[in-house]
Amino acid sequence: ERDRDVLVHRFLLELGEEETAAALGVRRGTVKSRTSRALERLRATVGEGLR
Image (cartoon, rainbow, N blue to C red; front, side, top):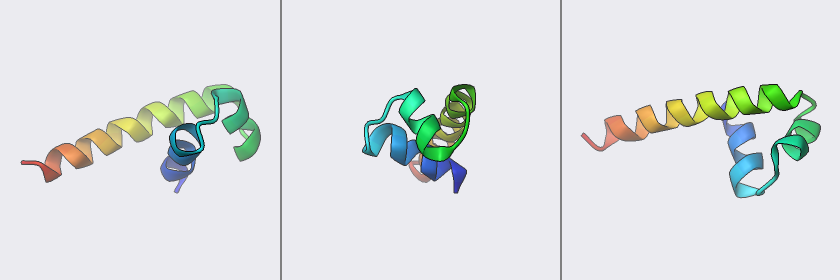
């Protein structure tokens, strides 16, 4: 759920890190780390699906 929330705000809604942080009620650093981890998980999932 947190992965989806941060990715939706950052990439679908095209919000910056500060705006995403405010919308989710977290710090900017939290947005950065969640975004990084969520993208890693997404890449791993998509990569597995393509094999």
